[in-house]
Length: 266
Ligand SMILES: Nc1ncnc2c1ncn2[C@@H]1O[C@H](COP(=O)(O)OP(=O)(O)OP(=O)(O)O)[C@@H](O)[C@H]1O
Image (tube, rainbow, N blue to C red; front, side, top):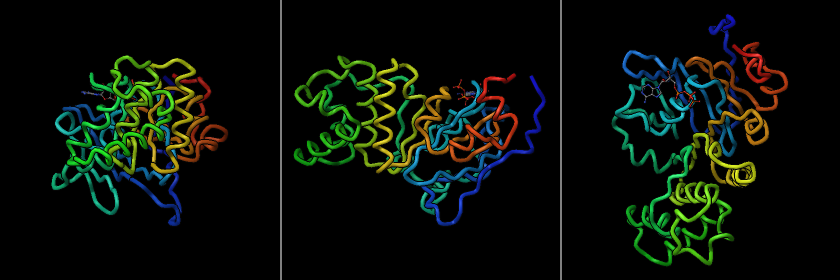
């Protein structure tokens, strides 16, 4: 492994005019004695797609899962996570409210073993929405936003498990956006999918960023460079660089970033 000076990281600070959807300040994550995330300070501009890239074990998922408190009970998370002037890392903040505002889609599609319709309707009913017309409207709108409506509109009562992997993942995206979050976190959402399904997901994300702020972990350099507006490069639990994707991929500030994206790493 080459020696890189990790103290010299290069985090772009966004100018005051850019609206920030979510930011972290000095975020530290510990799994027992394992200090897995060091001093992570990042700001995610609203209505953009930010990609988190880096080698396996660099801390991307650890960081992502901290953003909507999925690490509660799993790891100790210190530092601030600022959302609308509120530090949502505080114990005083209701974690379920956090997850309503900051939704998550996982690596493997995980629809409920229910109908396509119920996958979206059940969480809405649990949230207290009882009116059938209102639920029908949200089901239709979220399936349209997730670019799945045309494929399933005549079969809403069909089991979600009968859908293809790519369709299941778009259903999971629809289920997440039905809760009207501001921010969507996606942890390698296309890694289990074929290239055509991956491209559908990427096209869907481009549409979704008009209404949501998206933060996505990806192992694919191609996906990060094609689909994201901003890229953060992670290395051994540190965020080394965060900038416009085009700059990270064409003229990174840090040698270690350049080595990683050119495959000349380790
Ligand atoms: N639930 C957990 N319990 C204990 N340690 C964990 C847990 N999850 C992650 N870690 C540790 O935290 C560090 C960062 O792992 P993390 O999964 O965040 O990296 P990553 O960059 O997302 O990797 P990958 O690309 O392989 O998913 C590793 O040392 C890992 O072993």
